[in-house]
Amino acid sequence: MDQLSFFLAATVRMAIPLLIAALGLVVSERAGLMNIGVEGTMLSGAFAAFAVAIGTGSYWLGLLAGMAAGALMALIFAVASIHFRAPQIVIGCAINMLGSGFTAVLFRKMFFDASSGGTQATPFPSISIPVLSKIPVLGPTLFNHNIIVYIGFLLVPAVWFLMNRTSVGTRIIAVGEHPKAADSLGINVFATRYAATIFSGVLMGMAGAYLAIAQSNTFQVDMTGGKGYIAMAVVVLGKWRAIGCLAGALIFGGANALQMTLQNSGLGIPSNLILMVPYVVTVLAVLAACKRKAIDASAKGVPYIKS
Image (cartoon, rainbow, N blue to C red):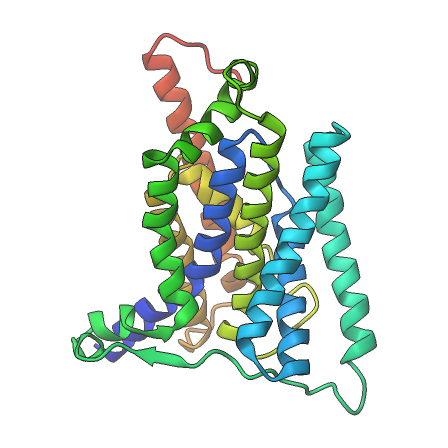
């Protein structure tokens, strides 16, 4: 029972950064902007959160700094893709390279030396929900985590409500699907896309901050390890819906938790094969989602051309 609780709790912890970043992507992509620079944005958020948490001793200020760094990276993407009409894929790749290289240089310059190589930030503490945390299996799984985990779960209904029950969500969807029609109705297409992209950057920065000052208490070069790309797969698997993203994030979080379990199992499985588990699951899930989309299109009599 303890092993099951550990596995399920690890699944939740691993799913949260994917979920938060994916929810940000849902908003920006529904507005018509496909930001593949999630990896670089999360890295920027992770480093900013770590550096500010070290400098101030406050993990809350670190979280705000991570969110601000994510917003800044998203703003760079928005200016390049909206104002200068640069190819979104190219800009996203540039954001990833910028985030990876810039954070690596700053980390080595500011922290990685003989005197401060072991610098660690104070992470967000776990908060046990009274009574609920005592429930067998379910308690340790859902009600004994740090505050960002709870925020991540609360963001699911919040984003769902935003996109489906508010005029703001209607504008975002209209701008993404029919920008000319939206403009003819008086909706400011550029302002809406800027706002959606910056909002997505805030959530990506929060996801990065979670990695540095909630899931761990340090920063490592390229510590996201592909989680930004997996978050993109979560969006595809979740059909660009908040509830779907929750399910997709838990699937990939379970794959990461399984990887950790196998590493500690002593079964003699080569470590390189174990490390492949989350990425293999990602590829299979995206292929399944694309196949499902092709089948749906075929059933409607629509030729399937691209995803």
